[in-house]
Amino acid sequence: MDSQRYETLSSLFEVVASLERKWANEWNQQNNLGFSKSHILLLDLLSKEGPKRPSAIAERLKVTTGGVTVLTTKLIKSGLIEKTQNSADRRAAQIAITSEGEKVLVESRAQVTAMANSMFGMLSTDEIKTLHTIFEKCLVSGNGQQGKLE
View: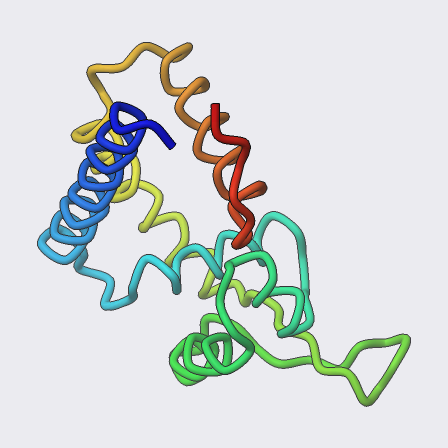
């Protein structure tokens, strides 16, 4: 890798890390729901796609199954999700969002929208789509594999 590419990638790493810290700080300051971003992402996933097995949740949220257990424990205790039996395989548990979980998700969407507008509101819709495409590409191809260096 040439030195200019290294410097550019290093700078990008710093910007992305700073952006994540800013997002986390804003979430912590504005969040009055008492749930982490990961809790909300889990509720959103279940709302959009229906009941999921813990292993499928772990894969989609890029966390371990132990991480899913930690996330779901708080949400189950709060009545926002429930564990159900898979109708096809009674040994397999599934996680489903409850109506109370849907209500919290609606509340959280307003907070997420406000934060996203605060952080990305200066971008056009096309720029946001491009940024999303780039980040997704990084996630899909960044599974520990080194991309082609030019």
